Length: 159
Image (cartoon, rainbow, N blue to C red; front, top):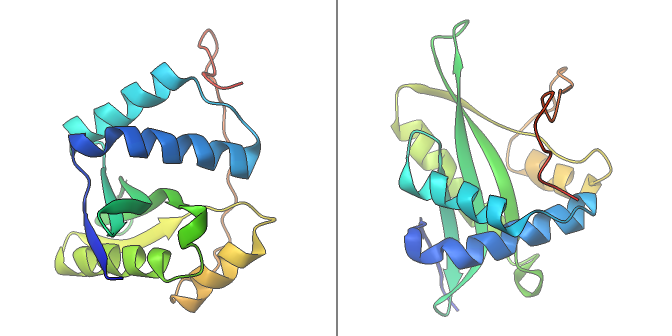
């Protein structure tokens, strides 16, 4: 069956929320606050300055997603696109869905002269995902990641 890649719309909100719920559980065993998550997905769908979702459809059903957000690099005078919220429905895994989503994002980034690179972060233990990313031409960096979350006085919105 043919795979169709397209930008997500407001009509995709429910599946994006479902997929993001699954990502959080599968990768971190965290349960997200459904109201906060739905509001966060709606915020991206309503404001392209926050990012955008791209989805893969097979047989009229969404089977995968990627969200892209943006980071300005003053050192390089351009945008990095950050791939986030990657999810492929379990029954569609190992079938080229992520590869198709990634290649679409890559083509869009290359077509935009202000975009200078693509980045993503991953779970250290997820060696299968890392091998997939390397096979697509991504390379390891020397950067680690640290955070302060939630900020003092704010709720974490996860359980």
